[in-house]
Length: 543
Image (cartoon, rainbow, N blue to C red; front, side, top):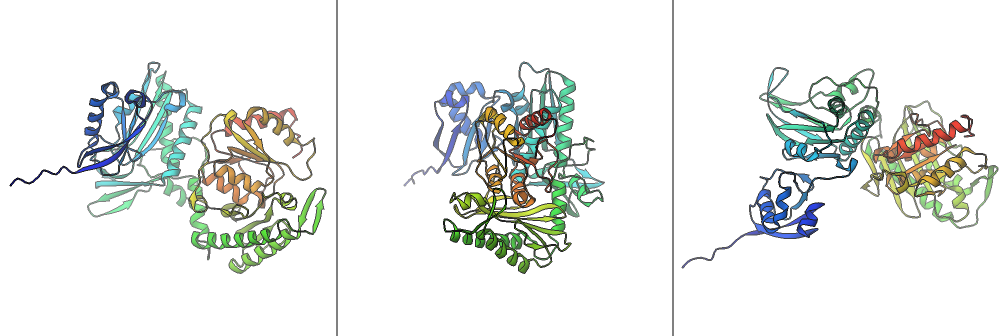
């Protein structure tokens, strides 16, 4: 007797983007395919079903589980496949990708090239068979992926500012690479070859310097992590940035300074101190912030004893009780650390470590029963903030951050917004309690009311910075702030992918009283507006 033939199948999700959506008349569907089918077989199936898709065959990219993939890849049950046609529309054609599949450089270059381009320059980094006289067997790359993508995007924007190019694309391999495989590809198109060559060299040099990707080389007698520019900078006396281990070519000598290498060095130094690990410091600080937040809630909307430090600048008994609690807990857990707190508590010890404490940021809101206030603690090491927490007790939102390890809200990683046009952006600012109509910020407020989608003034600088880190606001600025107002919040913004500076674009200084934080994409659009107002005021605006 003949046994019945059983066909084993699996189900995958197929997504259609751009022109493929129109040609197939689908946005997504669940497909049932034979077990062991590959990506090319799936494409052929849809090309036969929708013949017009064949027009895109030579330029289409295919992705599996959000990574560009080779068409020979064998699919697995539950995979998500995306058909990615050529993109269009200005800077939207730029792309920054990490992949564990072979890089289809020729397909990428073909897709990127346009009729107005007079030059296409392609750089491919290739795995070679030796390193310093030792025979290389293969390489492995790993990355801090969210930060790597963000840094690649920053390089793209910086390249565009420096060179007259049409488009730029970057793709980097992760995982194991064999000899001869492409590890990184950068493709630049431009009307002129000089700009394309210059942009491509600049981009690969910057990628090697600041993108957090590391290479491990395997030899017949062992393996080692390549000492790229990241490690050399961290170990050097000058400790200049920063962070990529990508080969041994000479890097460019531009003067742009970024933070990752410096952050790595700071992080390794401050974590040598007792009790300064992520597990300990952030857990203790989070527990203290929550305890102080609970105390504030007990006093919220209750009769309060209110005094004034100066006109309109009030302090409540809740501020003082919260600060006393926080300072006592910090002294217990971190003896010897300096503590600077808003209401004058704390201690000066001469330590390299200093906690900046605002026991109640948003006191005016609190006193009026308006539920926008928080507790914030920031830890600085030799003047650089390395960790912090912000706790909003009315929403039970705990923001935590450690330099070099990311920003989080209740355990979920944060990322800034991706809005690029001011007219689409929601921004925020704040005014000191003693503001007048002569204050410089009134002019800033008026100008950005005209230029943006809207401005919010919630009354808590720490929470405003958290909102930038979480992508709720696209930007925030304020004058006359103290270090405890912004210590934790500024680190949250930068670790979430944003940018922080003074309002004139000068480097951020924790002890300065002005601050401008953004998603990074609108930073260079807002700074000229600040400068314009400053120049009109003769630089004498009252901060």
